[in-house]
Length: 234
Length: 240
Image (cartoon, rainbow over all chains, first blue to last red; front, side, top):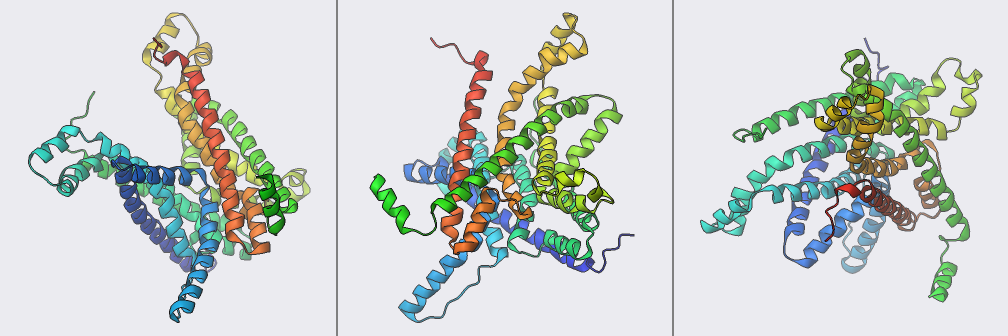
């Protein structure tokens, strides 16, 4: 049996941190993606421009650089803000910008840009006749979105969401670099202390494999469900 | 304008000639590392992709396993395993390999190459599998053998279909190379981290490299768009 030299529980806790981080970032990314896609498809030039700037900027910068910027820069901004609040209102406000929050913000922001593209494509894939029909029935814009666009869009968006999720899961490993004790960090410390790199990194690699393989199956199942009643061509 | 820049350069402590040289060295390291891993990775990926499409499971199986393992785990873990792991192999420190792998550059190059080769293999495999049947039938009808068919028909046609996905992989690799800085390589990100810790100026250090990475990315996007236009020239609608 695998002997983890007493690091087993720490590794398990690290795995939980990884999963929490991944799910929170995914939630943020989906919200940002929906906002971004709506902005890109809106008639407002300002909203379109802002969304395009967002996706272009994010895709030009490496995730690690952005994470370092948020982690180190975020604290500087918070300190400036808390100084200002103290000077102006004499309220003692302080907030530690920890690696977990920086990780969720960065990963959510990065994948929000990818999700924007996914959702944009999915919204465009919904037939315009569906929307016209909804408007003809007197649905409001919000109603059309919620009842007609969103459920039909989801089917087209699922494969893209699945791909993004797989990449996101692997990106969470980067947060160990800014000091979050996720499973990579625990494995790194254990490997250094015990001088046994293979012994600790390979189980963590398999943990990631299990997560990606499990998600693959789950996404396949979701896809199948979402496509019930759709006649496949060919 | 030049006066303004000169004045600004004189007034700040961070963007001095010395730090700009550090950034420049980092840029050279990043480009060097990414370029080498992409070229070697592509050279490895083409034969692997062909092996992956072969019917014999003893040939395609191991390639499948390799791409599955490298695509299913984070690059950071692969880098750690290679960087820390190579030093632990019994007796490696007595061989000439140690002269090579003692530098962090080569373990990182190995990890990046293996990673990009796995992704590229799958991209090329996808392109090979989607070759239209007619093209292969026509080649067979002309009496081409397997090798000639691969070289003249399948691979050139697959290259056209793969170039878009491959350009994404190239950009992904450029961005992924930032993690080289965690194994003490002073690439662009490494230079920014050093300058950050010297001046405690996160915005000057990281925003500046973010800008450099962005310029590199846009240059790559532009170059690939040119390449794509060139490769798909025959599919462009005739201009009236």
